[in-house]
Image (cartoon, rainbow, N blue to C red):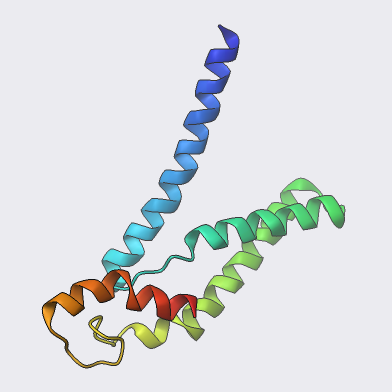
Length: 119
């Protein structure tokens, strides 16, 4: 019985992490109107930074977490300044600021704009 409760709590913990990531994605899309799929990548990068600082550099756990937060914050700032800021005023239809027919506009929200962010 204890194992089932433990597994349930682990599942709930993982679900909370996934909700937090998806809520961030939803807020960014709702406020800025651009699709930013970097949340998962930044989450993994933060885990890698924390692992490197704690496991390989031997920093205390909380110092490694703080360093990982700072590192991911700087990477996120660079992504926002380097990539996303250029997309704020761009029409989401074709990525060049020109309006397009509505079917292309709908498709661009899930195809063209994420393609610009990925490369």
